[in-house]
Length: 174
Image 1 (tube, helix red, strand yellow):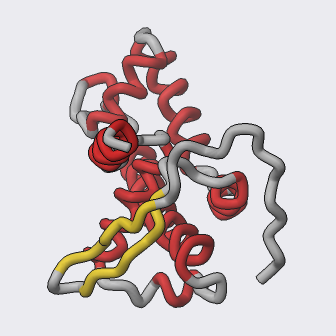
Image 2: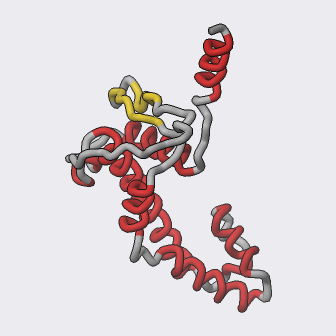
Image 3: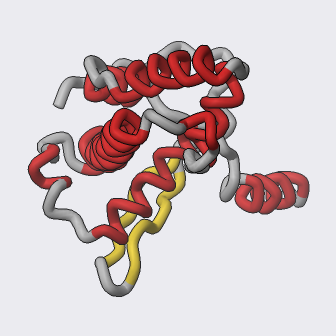
């Protein structure tokens, strides 16, 4: 692994990574560093892994076609897709195309989950980890890693607040 260079911070970052337990008794539990954000490398890994996937573009094209035929707003059709409520009459005559798009979107979701789990394990646990290793994971571990990835992606500070309160109380008592 490459040598890490320290930045000359005038103010050090407030939060230090904390260990997050992921998994169940059934799958086994592991600890993954939690930062409260995704690094540039982690985001880039995901973008590269998902680039070239046409599922979303196919869904948008079909939605535009349906909206035009039904005389409704594109956003309304997309909302139906996201809700999974494609039994409305505006979808009549599009059954085969809808089935294909839904299948493609499902495959994209599985791929995104696999890549997110692999990303966290590769960048935070073991730099020799691979997508092939990820494919062997128990579903509970995969789900836990994906949930952690999503929290990091939205820069959730859930789980850090309690630690900060304890740290602030400790520093005030000094």
